Amino acid sequence: LKADIGTLSSAAGAIDIKNGAEVYGDVYIGLNADPTKAVSKGGDSIKGEIFKNPNPTTVKTPKSPSLLSKGKISGNNVTLNAADSGTYSGIEISNNGKLNINGNVLLNVTGKIELKNSAEVIIASNGSLTLYLAGNLEAKNSSGFTNESKVPAKFKLYGTGNNQTIELKNSADLYGVVYAPNASMELHNGANVYGALVVNDLEMKNSGNLFYDVALKNVNLADPEAQFRVVQWEEL
Image (cartoon, rainbow, N blue to C red; front, side, top):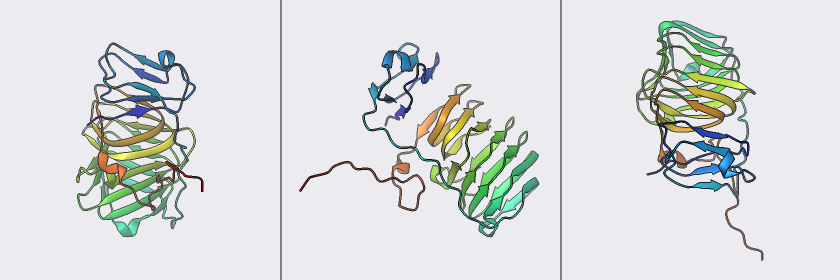
């Protein structure tokens, strides 16, 4: 199976594929883009074709859910269950700390998330985390998210703010979905990502790989990223 990547931008260098990086799929660029300028690549780094997107998807900023305000999450060893779902002003996990997600947890974070060195958010195999974030996310050295089920749909991150930054330095593979159309995202440390990413701009460093999970194509009307699009019509 192949994984396509794309941008709505027509700017020069909108997609920059550095030496040693490869795309095993097609590349889509803005309708008014010049393919020779919009895509910067080294050698035979694109295994598919470069196309102009004739019907670009409308990217909308997710809306924060209305949930009961519950203060701030902080500490060294914190456990959240479904009953702890709510709105929080921020999340800060100490060095070597753990934020354990048990059950199906829905969080609306209005401020910043900071995972300090070697801190970890652990989503139990029988749980899930749906996270709405208005502020920035900074995961310091060897910190990050561990999705024990390895099912990307069980960890969803929605960026609801403007000019956000999402910086992950996962020490292990990341299984999840990020839909943050106004965010700049950086992935460090060579960890593989399994899922899907929709961001304003993306930079992957240190030999990491991105694998798209085809199961994510199956959405229902309750999913914030679901959109109606006209694919065929007939005049009567």
